[in-house]
Length: 75
Image (tube, rainbow, N blue to C red):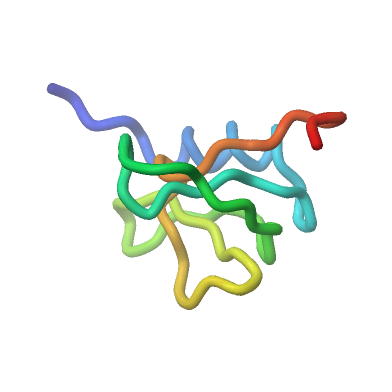
């Protein structure tokens, strides 16, 4: 299976999510309820292979595949 292009993922994420927007984050995909965090940076490609973003209150960056934008108007 072909891996997704990390720069394409970053571009799509940065189009949908701005710095200061809220995202849902899953520590382990498919397990439990997500936590909500505010983005602290634009997404970027880490090490040439992984699309990541920095979240306020979360140590280190997280993979974009673990994040989902929170739709405006959702409490």
